[in-house]
Length: 388
Image 1 (cartoon, rainbow, N blue to C red):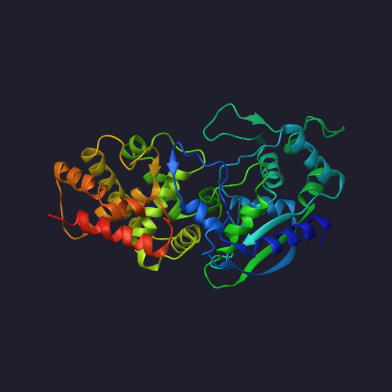
Image 2 (image 1 turned 60 degrees about the horizontal axis):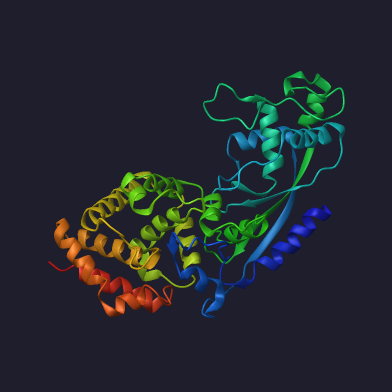
């Protein structure tokens, strides 16, 4: 095993036993007010320490096999906020190193227990460089007719200016058969659906700025749950209520939180971020038809609130209040589930009544992720919106 991978494993071992969850960086308080972020960081002392048992093993992949695995999604390069950042010369020098038989850093993969698929934790730039070179286009854009050809740039002759198809047969075979070492990690315990992948990915991909919890979820829980969140996030009514899409995916996290609390509020326990991780993992590959029902419910709720409360919806003071959003949406969803159908005027009255409830006001501003506070907040909202 290379020293690079040894260093990564050492970092991984220290990362997987910590208090609470990964903290957000640079919260935009002008947009979203969420005390849960602070409480989940372990500042309250209530979140139990998390500990995982992880095994790892090494695999030597030939380059051609790696590219084929990426194309058939046996190896998945997660879709998350940070995009491909290497320049053409940087990618070219990596390809040149392989052509010359020089050693290159290994990659880091996490294996999903259910499907056996592997998610890229470290090595995205290297793997995408290979994929782009084999396909012939550098950083291609979907449906574009002006994609840039991937000609090796800034490397020595005879490779400079070459496409993959320009290489002579011996060089192509040499590149195809080049070996990239991978360290594969797999969660042995606890048996909670690979939630360690969330923490591994966040700790080893912090880079220049720390990823938010939802950015990490989007990377490691790719599937129908993420597709459903993205669909709901594009609803025009939701965009009008929340505002422009949040570049740290806070709006998508709110939708996930509605789904999770509506369906499994009775199972909630701190930290909130871990509760959402488990829900996302358990529903990662849920039947898309079931998600259609939940998306329609979310759309109905948002549409009704938008008509009943035209100004400052879910903003009791200044910012968008996450606890208020959660309680209102879950409370109205339960009312609709029980056949209670308010017109806009009545729903507006009940919304106003809810925000004059002294205990409810306390429960949306302080200790918002506390289990009892969360339960009481949802109970009050449910009772208010259940009124005829």
